[in-house]
Image (cartoon, rainbow, N blue to C red; front, side):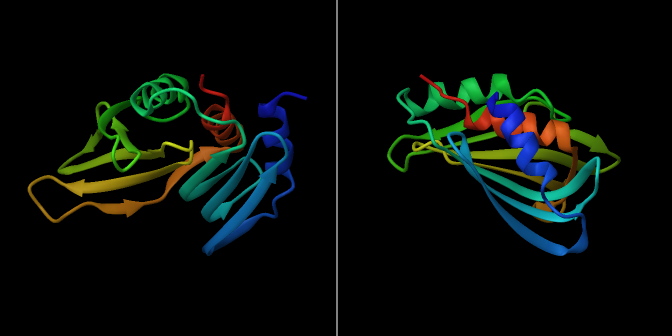
Length: 158
């Protein structure tokens, strides 16, 4: 069974959920441990606050290379990601939407924080142009897009 299929199977075992916000911790043997912070989870998809993935596979590439590979792999989001900052001393890289979505005076963008050990956490933010600091907001993914994204984040990077 492929990693993507293993993740899809585990996601299909999660109960349906309709608020309040809840965390589901999942282990997919030989793939990753996953933490889903969800608002709703339906048969076809869900509204998520955060998807955090810690892969089983070791990371051997420099952090910036690892982050750039993840940016190229994650194709199921509304906007493609790009590396914004890489801090080798802290062992963290930040990726964000290459072109944020704009609705009126509001900007929406994804942010993926990646650690040297491979742990990655995906969130979405809203920012009022010329206004207050950003605010985390939920984002919607189908279960299929969620499974692919998790498998992409967990796949070996060498």
